Length: 80
Image 1 (cartoon, one colour):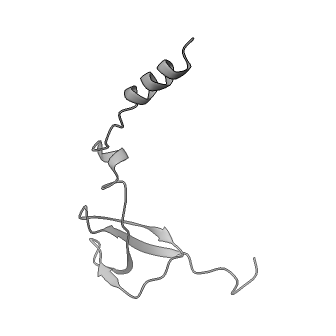
Image 2: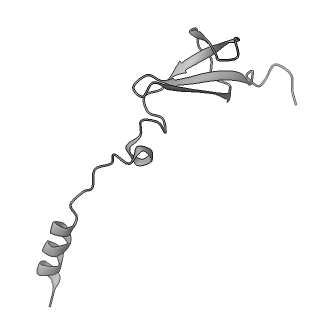
C-alpha cells in the first residue's frame, strides 16, 4: 500500500445519547471530543442519532402501518 494515502484506522467510541448506550469499535472517523472508556483509556467519541439501541426495528417499538385498508380498496377497485 502507498504510504500517507489512507486515513488512520483506530479505535473510536460511537455513542447514542438518546438511548444512553455506547460501543467501542475501529473506524477512520475523526472527532475532537474524547471519552474515557471502561478500560481506562481515552478514545475519540462520535455521537450518532440512531443506533441499534434506539432504532425501532431493533427495539420492537416500530409502528405497524395499516395496509389492510389500502389492500381492500385496491381489490374493490380492480376486482372483476
